[in-house]
Figure (cartoon, rainbow, N blue to C red):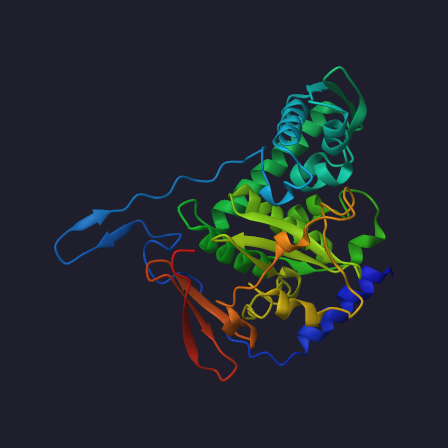
Length: 348
């Protein structure tokens, strides 16, 4: 059992016995706009049919501006060219330079931004603006695998949230959905393949440990346009750093997942934390690391990943989630005393 597994298992036990009050969460949003199954709003004078939002479609070109210190727009475009080539079963792609080629074909890059092809497509060399690809799986089988993965991501997004939600509403609904449907489980570490331990495995099997959960949650958020990236520590615990309304927050879905106990209420203790709340929970020797930057650049501007806004401090006492009213822009939650409270998230 490695250091990350021991750490995560210990933290899981801590969470289970934390004494947080548990109540059954609301199954639906309070108002018509926020309800996934409502299509009609009735007033005193007229019955007006409301339009359902456009369904999510798969985005093969997810983008994370948080990585701009190491990933230029030219690199992103090269990566998109590569993803398009993989989806079409092609052997080459246009690439700006060798540095972009190395980033595009790195296992971590593919694993985080096109998970279904991770380790199954690798780089085979760069020359004169062209990157070459090597396929380790029959192309027809890989195409079918990619298609199934893309369909699963679209299904998750459309089941969990709505395209007309604000960034915060997408984040809240995806956090609730993932925590309710995923299970913390390090047993897949017995296997070493991409189908056993990866963001891909976490997204398709709905289980994993902290680094998989952090990456999978980040990927779902990027798919619906919310800025997010995995963040970790030298002790190798990982969570997700998100940007909402121009402000950063730490969201640790690992300690919220309860798919093995679906009747449990969602704890908000580790949702939208500040840096001041996050750091005391970690080992004193831990150093914060942006997971997708530090392997490429040892020294970078960690201040760009600050989290100081205390809007959601009441969640961390801890509180349990009741529901979200997207018309009133409030979250309803139960505090430690058992009282039902509301917190306004305004225009986030």
